[in-house]
Length: 346
Length: 266
Image (cartoon, rainbow over all chains, first blue to last red; front, side, top):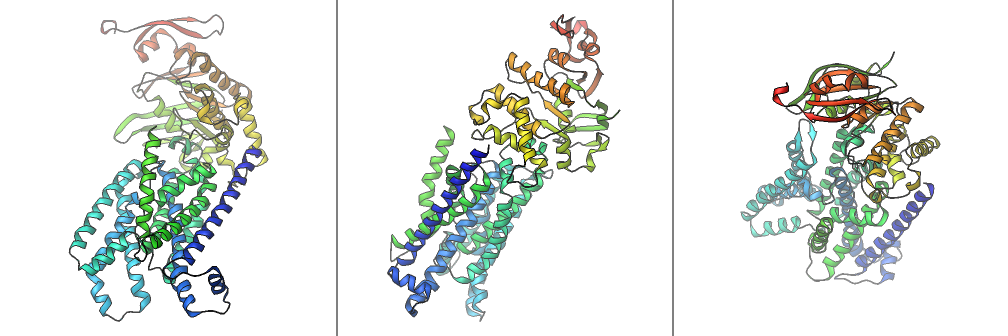
């Protein structure tokens, strides 16, 4: 038994190191390339504060670095939430999107823009508040959608996973329709910024976003990682889990809440980015097996790496115009999703 | 004498459907007790209810004279293990890993097995004769092997009471007896209290100290195999005309043939 465990943990350490290298490499590409190309030396010098150049400072610290950090954080959050959701629903095709959080947050942002945007720009509100207004609304909308889905999916105080997925799909399309309806009534300019946000983009990342989402991510990330071992047991059917003395319902609800928090925090700054939460856990399981205390951190790192790369592609391939990172992820994600479906049928 | 289970006015079922009502029953400690009855009589429901997998609707269950309601699910898991009828686990899971899951209620550190944990896993592997394929994945095992592995997981839970819901389903004749022999051995050598549901009345009679015969949510009769496996009770419970004799080898009653009762016979 000890031998087996040693092997798994050394595979884990290897995987994590390679992923970290991959993330650093992707960040390097992201940092040096773009409308304003920089050499390696420039980047290193700027980061280490050796004869600082205000132009480089601006590009790196105000544009590129926060963008990479946000991509990484959102990837980590979605990657972890995906592991939790697939674990507790025992459904390998579950994705944070099914909780309707993305759609709920999207609808809330559209409503916000529809009713308040004008007044916001005219009024003299501190920049902090105006930057945060949209994500705040996104968060509230996401949480509201999750709450709705919870209450519909409950039956006799029992959270039914099948119902959860079905309700998620229904709420998703409901909120989607609402967003579409409202956005058709908007001014062209508002519509555009709403559309960009909903497609999932992080080009407007800034340090304030980082500061607002970081506490959620650290708190819930630690919680979910601590509870990851429970997901191993959730692979059994419910009767066996109960027999082992695990309060199934209670633990499932707590984990679900935590993943709602993670997804909401991500969606509120990046808009709706799908498929990361679906892909990252699957890739992680192929790399390190099915023990969730290994799957969880690996999936988080894969999520971060994928998002940084996807954002880099979105930024450079069609330069000078940019492709929203959510769209890049979907372009990669949809074929993979179909592949999973075909494979799970076989 | 201590009882393993004492049920008072117990009612249970699913959502709107009551399966049984106002049940009063005791199950003795240190014995093998088997619940028999036709399909849908509530035998599995009864087993699940006393194993707290199914929420009771009314009444009280005392587990070793303690009201089960006052015990946490983890405390209960240290006293009883229940093996459900169709347990599921991912096919890539290793035999050893699944058996280690059984240690959950005793573990404080979730990432490391203690020496005691390892010992109990070894013991469970030995008792169930699963040592040979301890490193294989569940997906590679035959039905008989897999059932014994699940039994081993329940044993690793280190409980005095074991509840088994039709542990021999889908197994061929030899593997059915293999599982029941393990169960008997557990009772005889480790004084484990066993409560199980079986379909085969001959197996029930051969391997049990006590039988509980149920029909339509009502306990018709309880007693020794000799008292239950007789023409009268079989007619009442299963609606059959059973031909019964004593097995000359095992000295337990066996039903060697039967006919379904026609309306006229009743």
